[in-house]
Length: 148
Picture (cartoon, rainbow, N blue to C red):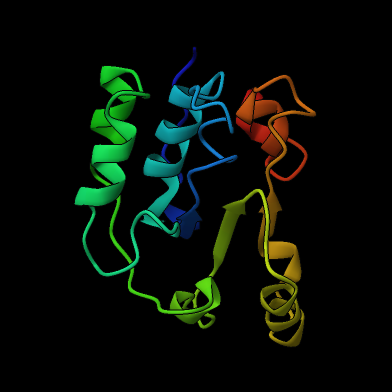
């Protein structure tokens, strides 16, 4: 896969879920995950936003992902930052900064919060089943240059 250029003028915050987002419900790595992770790392700061990493500690998510991800993708994922939240994932989102949130499913109250903050479109719904487990094809409509 071709390398993605660094776009210094558009550094974003990316919030990333795990189950149904970068791995399937059957615990398989999403197709094209390597290019997707490299893109996120090159263009922004990546934070875990998953039940596997809730209390500022990445060890749980990394233990969970180690037997699933390729060695290179595990290395890339190891660089992601932890988050701390209690009930709703939206507790951790910095709404003052540009961000995208990659997740397969949000609670209705989380959707409502995003709408109230006028950033519902910042949620990128991931549907690996619909896109044959290919994460790049899933996010491409929101990031047209992702597959170029």
